Length: 286
Image (spheres, rainbow, N blue to C red):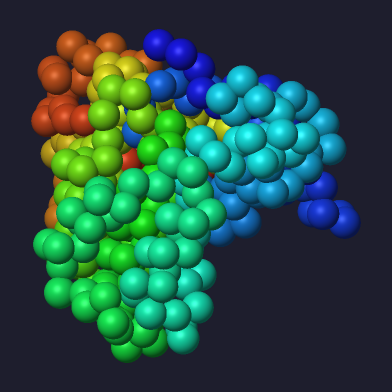
């Protein structure tokens, strides 16, 4: 696989706030990478650096073999971006939006945009202000996915959408955009919705990368154990990352534990991204 994003020791300070603190991560071709972190963790700063919209104070960063800040124009022709808020002018008509993107982006494919929109109820004569949040996201997605880009960056792309619109968004992303030559980097708070599509998981907290693993390694590295109260002490002896109680049973999360030993105590399964995220953020027993 080819490395699309190579970030090494990135630092970025805003006044007294260190948004990135030695952050290092890589993104390979053909992967769907989830960049997950709490508010203020550095997610948006990292994305801005990748897009050439922010210049880091220290470290090195290459995106598609380019310096994103110094070669921003060249990078922009090969990368697409959907922000966490709609940026389409509310007075703009749908057809005008299509014509504008077709006129400014050399890799825009109008026929592909038409294929996306024909499956929606969006009218070409409608103004953006007349569309629902879900329809605006559909329009934005159609415009972006019609660009022949190697890297798609999504920053909270389904923020404010209902559950049906969110599902349609990710279904379209997988069926109409993703292939072996394209890569997606996504940040989201709704981690349960992207859990089944991610190939790689990156956790960031206070500007530092605290986890960076392919999903298949997550399954072999982390385990969740549920035991009856009389097995709790034995489970604690195996040094879990976190412990909580649920419906009268004890639930533990482990990193690098002996899976055979865990199975001898109770029910073992792979933790959800949400549970793993909480465990890594807590860094101790709850």
